[in-house]
Amino acid sequence: MGQREIVMLGHGEIGRALESALVPRHRISIWEKDLDTGVENIPLEEVVEPGCDLILFAIPTSPHREIAERVHRAAPHEVACLTIAKGLDADGHTPADIMQAVFGNERQFGVLYGPMIAENMLAGLPGFATVAAQSEAVISLVLELFAGSHLHVSGSHDVVGASWAVILKNVYVPLVGAADELALGANIRGFLLAAALNELARIVQKFGGEVKTVYGLPGAGDLITTATSSGSHHRNAGMKLAAGQTDELLASGTNIRGEGFHALRMLDQHKLIEFADFPVVSAMRDLLDKPKNARAIILKLCENASLLQ
Image (cartoon, rainbow, N blue to C red; front, top):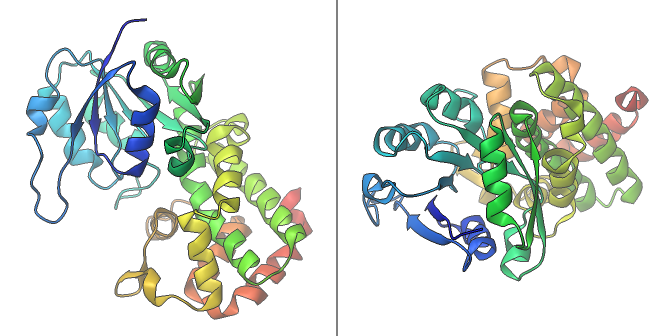
């Protein structure tokens, strides 16, 4: 296997973690944009020049459409794209939806999701992920790129399932954090995780994904990791909600920061699901609306044995 040329869009903590798994075996060019000034370290159109093998989107979901359109105009269509973003845009679209809309059948793309805690990977500890793509060529390329590194990657064709599993898991995690903050015990944590997985499988099926993906790395693997990691933003956000510490979670107005909270609002705003059919997601919405009632919300949810049927 020879050295590959990779363009990484964004260079935050997770980007640096992936970089640690790719160098020195491959060459990486970094493109960044200052969110405050809009200044780019190098024009995007210059960095995605002919000769690169993969363009890696290590940026949030919100700028995906703009950046994907610029990439599509500038980079040769044979260059594939890979995203690690785990959110919904303002219209309720996943990163994969956005890439499909922009690229159509002219450019191949994939998603890379799973337990990839950046702090662990930067320390040289193993990470785990699934690359999901319609194209076998994209899967093979990504498997080749990370072969022999401390990021262990498997392949899947279930782009829809992987996308929704990894996004929705962030909706459930704050419930677990809230239960831990309230010292409701390890048994309730186990119940909430089992109920979340069961419900997540039903939602993923509704969107056209495969149940087995939910119980793989993008779903169960990432859910359990995020819900039990002390450094997890979503777990800690749930703890702060239950503790009444909402001020530092506020971005503007009454909007709480976080991909999971944003995804929850998009599910509601765009009527992507019937909340009455999904009690655990509904409980998370109640927790976000009325954090002072966290204990009652969680205990009531735990009385619903049908959540595990």
